[in-house]
Image 1 (cartoon, rainbow, N blue to C red):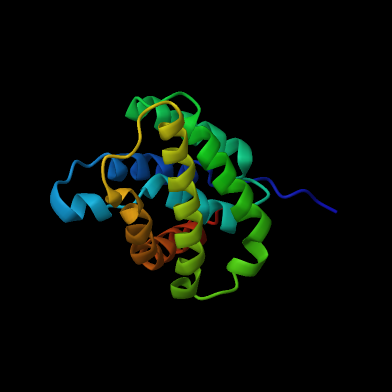
Image 2 (cartoon, rainbow, N blue to C red):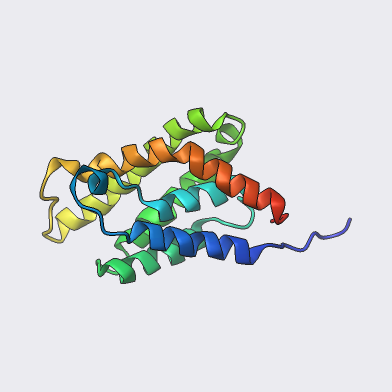
Length: 162
């Protein structure tokens, strides 16, 4: 049996970098409220596509980077992203066989859980959400999932990321 050497790490890293940039775009009004957490969605995609390579550790590191980038409590997003990665890896066999529009429902559930964890931790430390729009990015993520899925899947296939 021969071992397959992982390839395409730069594609994975580039997708996370682009997701960090997309998430940090300042938008106002209702587009800003529905703007999804692209980093979480890219993490979900790679956990579905390569669960043996991207998992809890990657989720934790990416979450720490989000904490630093947003100036949040260190570990707040790390815990949420590690939980997100764990659940995605545990259910990847059931989700990845679905068409992207049906996967979007699972993505909505994962993003809602992530939002609840982040805002629960914010409430515990004394910073509760200011309004009822804190779950809107999860809905935006569900809407944007099919497009993100197709883009990342095509990039993974074109660059033969294993």
